[in-house]
Length: 107
Image 1 (cartoon, rainbow, N blue to C red):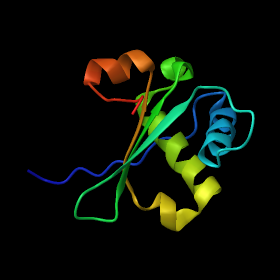
Image 2: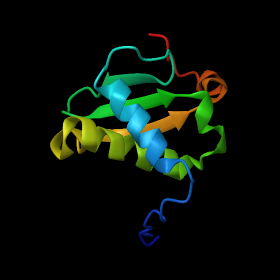
Image 3: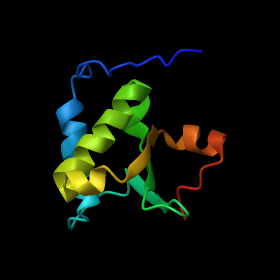
C-alpha cells in the first residue's frame, strides 16, 4: 500500500487564535486560570517524546484535526519549537470524549 501524505488545512475555526492564546496561558501556568482546559503530558517510555491530551468543553465546535494543530501551535509559542517537536500525540478532547476513550485527565 502506498504512503498517503496529507497536509492539514487552513485555520478554519473562527476562534482558532483565542484557543491558542488560552492554551498558552495554561501551558505557562499563569496565575488566575480557570479549571479548564486540563492538560495532561505523558512521557513516552524509551524515548524523549510526550503525549499531550487537552480536555476542554470548548473543543465541541472545533474539528479534531484543528484541535491538534491548536495544541502544537500553543506549545510552540509557550515552550518553543524544540519542546513542541517532542510531542508525538496532541489530542484535544471534550471531557466526555476523554471518558469514552478511557483517558484519565484528572491524574
